[in-house]
Structures are given as structure tokens and as C-alpha cells.
Image (cartoon, rainbow, N blue to C red; front, side, top):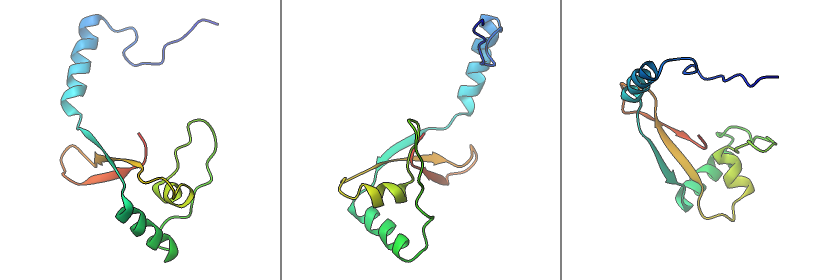
Length: 101
């Protein structure tokens, strides 16, 4: 079987690819990496205890990334966990907190 590229850029001329990549880059927003701390863990634990947080996930597999609730619950001995701040839309300053990208 021949390898079939999946990218939408495949088959475009170099100039077309460059114009498309430039147009996409203009619309992108930055994503910021930060970490949880003990206060964050306390808030997550309190929400879990009060039943206000989502149920803990039971994902498996090499690409599985646990939710922040699962990270704090299962890996409570870890002082901090990575979280990402991602803008909701290009037109807003509101951010989503993501566990993984």
C-alpha cells in the first residue's frame, strides 16, 4: 500500500502552501502553560468531596491524559501538574483551562 498524506496542504504548490500557512498563523492565539499548586489541589479536592466536580475518568492507553480532578486524586503526592490556558475564541479574553494539548 502506498503512503497517502492526510494533510490539506498536500498537493498544493509551494506558494499556495505558504499563503495558507500565513493566513492560518494570523488567526492563531497563544496558549499559555502554567502549573497547579497546593491551593489549586485544595479547591479540586473540596469540589470532589462536595460532588461539584466531574466524576473521575478511567482512561487507558498511551495517549490518555487524565483530567485535573483525576491528577489531583490519583497523584496527590505530586506537588504540581501542568495545565494550559487557551483562549475560547479569537475575539474574547476568556480562557479555558486545559489539562493537555
